[in-house]
Length: 122
Image 1 (cartoon, one colour):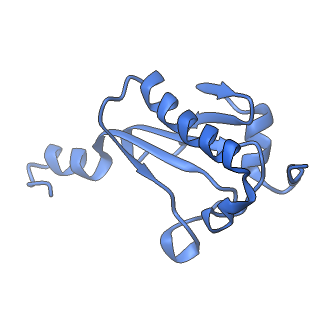
Image 2 (cartoon, one colour):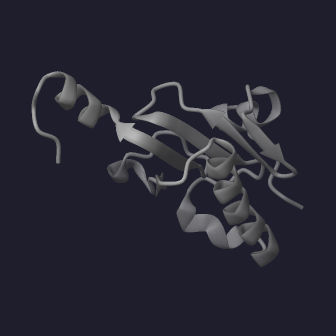
């Protein structure tokens, strides 16, 4: 049986009641409230796992469905090219301890701001 949603976990609540842009059994996608790119989506598994370090808690079939859902979410958003990111641990930038994937499409906000200011991007 998967771990039950944690009352204190924001992402567990968003799995149940968030504004989903894409959903499938066991997974949802939402827009990031602080986008780092033109398109910035978060893929959340319904199963509460703190971090990618614990991904082995997913049975192989469920882990495969999660990866397919990530790819389907990017396709549904109309993205051909995109970045896929998972922050693992606080020193890597993880601030919500519920495994989630960032899908970043289009220009990163830093690139857009640099361009608007006339600076050269990376």
